[in-house]
Image 1 (cartoon, one colour):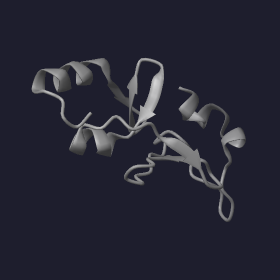
Image 2 (cartoon, rainbow, N blue to C red; image 1 turned 90 degrees about the vertical axis):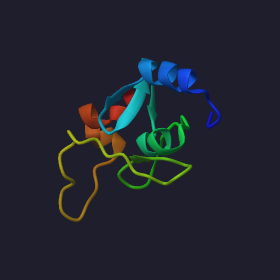
Image 3 (cartoon, rainbow, N blue to C red; image 1 turned 30 degrees about the vertical axis):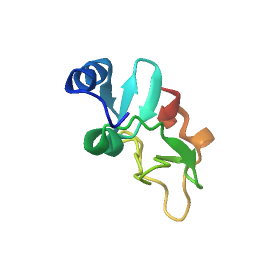
Image 4 (cartoon, rainbow, N blue to C red; image 1 turned 90 degrees about the horizontal axis):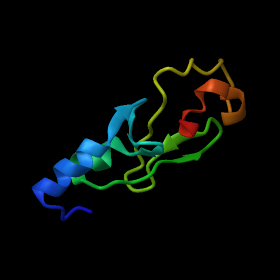
Length: 90
Protein backbone atom coordinates (compact mmCIF):
# COMPACT_ATOMS: atom_id res chain seq x y z
CA UNK A 1 0.00 0.00 0.00
CA UNK A 2 3.07 2.27 0.29
CA UNK A 3 3.18 2.83 -3.49
CA UNK A 4 -0.17 4.57 -3.82
CA UNK A 5 -0.58 7.59 -6.06
CA UNK A 6 -1.51 10.86 -4.41
CA UNK A 7 -5.11 10.48 -5.63
CA UNK A 8 -5.30 6.96 -4.17
CA UNK A 9 -3.88 8.20 -0.86
CA UNK A 10 -6.47 10.98 -0.71
CA UNK A 11 -9.28 8.55 -1.56
CA UNK A 12 -8.13 6.18 1.21
CA UNK A 13 -7.92 8.97 3.76
CA UNK A 14 -11.44 10.11 2.81
CA UNK A 15 -12.74 6.65 3.82
CA UNK A 16 -11.10 6.74 7.26
CA UNK A 17 -12.07 8.35 10.54
CA UNK A 18 -9.74 8.89 13.48
CA UNK A 19 -11.16 8.04 16.89
CA UNK A 20 -9.80 6.59 20.12
CA UNK A 21 -6.16 6.86 18.96
CA UNK A 22 -6.65 4.77 15.80
CA UNK A 23 -8.07 4.94 12.29
CA UNK A 24 -11.32 3.21 11.37
CA UNK A 25 -12.80 2.40 7.95
CA UNK A 26 -16.50 2.29 8.74
CA UNK A 27 -16.90 -0.62 11.15
CA UNK A 28 -13.48 -2.06 10.18
CA UNK A 29 -10.50 -1.33 12.37
CA UNK A 30 -8.77 -0.21 14.39
CA UNK A 31 -5.77 0.58 12.18
CA UNK A 32 -2.38 1.95 13.26
CA UNK A 33 -2.18 5.74 13.10
CA UNK A 34 1.63 5.78 13.00
CA UNK A 35 1.89 3.37 10.05
CA UNK A 36 -0.76 5.24 8.08
CA UNK A 37 0.57 8.71 8.87
CA UNK A 38 4.23 7.95 8.17
CA UNK A 39 4.20 5.11 5.62
CA UNK A 40 0.66 5.06 4.16
CA UNK A 41 0.31 1.46 5.41
CA UNK A 42 -3.08 0.28 6.65
CA UNK A 43 -2.14 -2.13 9.46
CA UNK A 44 -4.83 -3.61 11.72
CA UNK A 45 -4.11 -3.40 15.46
CA UNK A 46 -3.97 -6.56 17.58
CA UNK A 47 -4.74 -7.06 21.28
CA UNK A 48 -2.27 -8.82 23.56
CA UNK A 49 -0.82 -8.68 27.05
CA UNK A 50 -2.44 -8.56 30.49
CA UNK A 51 -4.50 -5.42 29.79
CA UNK A 52 -5.23 -6.20 26.11
CA UNK A 53 -3.88 -2.83 24.96
CA UNK A 54 -4.12 -2.74 21.15
CA UNK A 55 -0.74 -2.64 19.41
CA UNK A 56 0.57 -2.59 15.86
CA UNK A 57 2.32 -5.82 14.77
CA UNK A 58 4.37 -3.80 12.27
CA UNK A 59 5.76 -0.88 14.31
CA UNK A 60 4.76 -1.98 17.87
CA UNK A 61 2.93 1.30 18.57
CA UNK A 62 0.32 0.93 21.31
CA UNK A 63 -3.05 2.64 21.00
CA UNK A 64 -4.71 2.90 24.39
CA UNK A 65 -8.28 4.19 24.41
CA UNK A 66 -8.10 7.72 25.88
CA UNK A 67 -11.57 7.28 27.43
CA UNK A 68 -10.60 4.16 29.39
CA UNK A 69 -10.08 4.77 33.10
CA UNK A 70 -6.60 4.20 34.52
CA UNK A 71 -5.75 0.69 35.67
CA UNK A 72 -6.12 0.08 39.41
CA UNK A 73 -2.79 0.07 41.27
CA UNK A 74 -0.99 -3.27 40.96
CA UNK A 75 -3.44 -4.82 38.52
CA UNK A 76 -4.47 -4.30 34.92
CA UNK A 77 -8.05 -4.40 33.66
CA UNK A 78 -8.58 -7.20 31.17
CA UNK A 79 -10.67 -6.85 28.04
CA UNK A 80 -13.62 -8.59 29.72
CA UNK A 81 -13.43 -6.30 32.74
CA UNK A 82 -13.08 -3.25 30.47
CA UNK A 83 -16.73 -3.58 29.43
CA UNK A 84 -17.59 -0.45 27.48
CA UNK A 85 -13.86 0.28 27.21
CA UNK A 86 -13.15 -2.80 25.10
CA UNK A 87 -13.02 -0.40 22.18
CA UNK A 88 -11.71 -2.80 19.56
CA UNK A 89 -15.33 -3.94 19.34
CA UNK A 90 -16.06 -0.41 18.09
